Image (cartoon, rainbow, N blue to C red; front, side, top):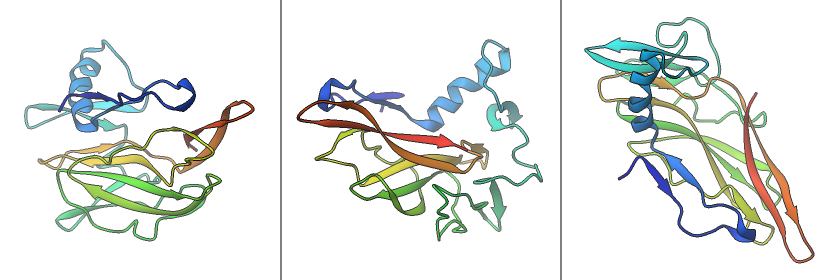
Length: 187
């Protein structure tokens, strides 16, 4: 599987095709560039562990500062500090997950784009991200946001450290079709 995957079909209304990046692969490619000083990413630091170079949220790992979605060790696994989406906290946020896992929040949406339920999910591969663009006749019912990754050697990658909001924005209206876009924001 390539680093960047592009959806081949054009979205309704001529919206551009979407692309998404495999999180773990991207992190491993960015680490040497940040360490060398060729690029800078706010809130990210480079840490050398076991001869490898890894990215970590500044203050992550041993930090005692709590923030939403903070990765914490729990026995032989990991848990996250509770966070919210549009004020809703996932009921399963204290679920323990293991190494070599992506962790994300899944939001369930009604036909108006209102978040009706949220839950944490974890798997060895990231979810299949639904398109951000949609029309009034085909609104998405699910939206995902990455919050963490723990690789096979236990190195943690904090991808989000803020509560989230999810909105549906009108981006194009004509006589026959309304076009919308899902918009995530870290608060």
